[in-house]
Image (tube, rainbow, N blue to C red; front, top):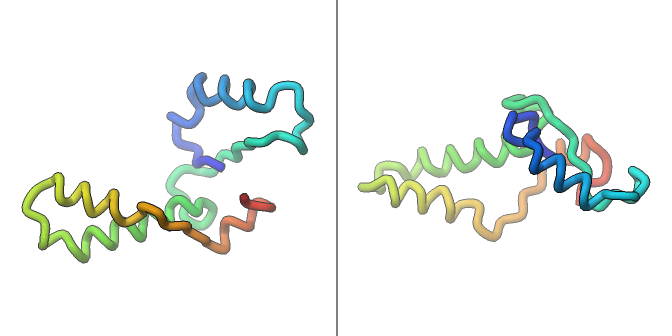
Length: 95
């Protein structure tokens, strides 16, 4: 699943999906992308992840002296986490 951001509609993304799903019936596709409306938290679980990361950075921002430290906060927050939001199940089985 991907949001409706313009870069998700690029030819490379379409080419990849056509290649990996080639010759298969839709029910057997290993990858299916559903376009969400961009920046619509009610539909898009990725918005929830972004919100959590932003709050983490806001809470710890004063401890950072450089942008690279802020970047490290961003990278470390999601590293190794598995996010599970109820809205992920709005679109059927989410694996």
